[in-house]
Length: 205
Ligand SMILES: [Cu+2]
Image (cartoon, rainbow, N blue to C red; front, side, top):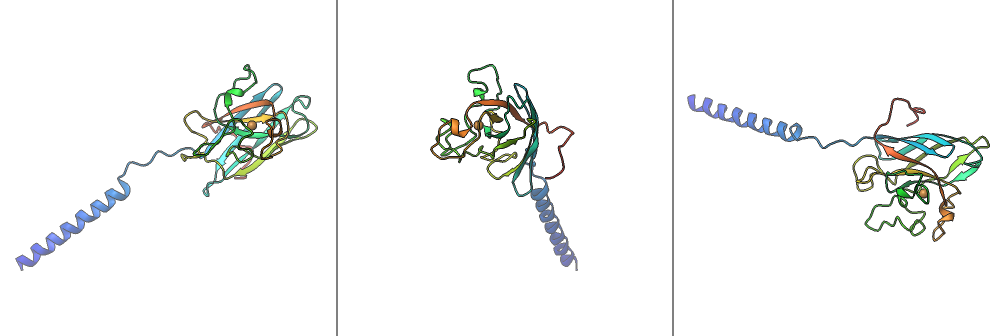
């Protein structure tokens, strides 16, 4: 009888140890730092302002949406190239303006950011054109599977950050085209920021 109880106690002890071990392995690991799934871009350029909100969905797609206001004499009605560029540094005073953002975001191993025309329109940062109306207003709303906001090999939050650029000309999305055919000069720039802010343009995520 005593022997049986001892066996039983040992069994219960062993089961308890196993349960503690399973619990520790399951819940006790330090959680992997979560990258943000929302981001914001404040675009500025001569007579151009705008805000874009980036939201990563559960399936990994990133929605980029927001509004741009401008003087239509600067940001002319029609199509304008819009891309994610490889560095989060917007400097209007350099020549050419906003060249501090580098080429189009295109991390390796076969990425080619510069010259811009080399891998266009297959850079991960290549996005659909912005459509500007007669008043100089534009609403942008696209989904991309090319980049993430969370930590990944294609995250826009890499070591030097990323920026969004609005170009002078339409992006003709042409392979083996010229830099001008990929949008030409840079009119507005905004750093992709972790700070999503309170306001949202809408909840269409
Ligand atoms: Cu660009």
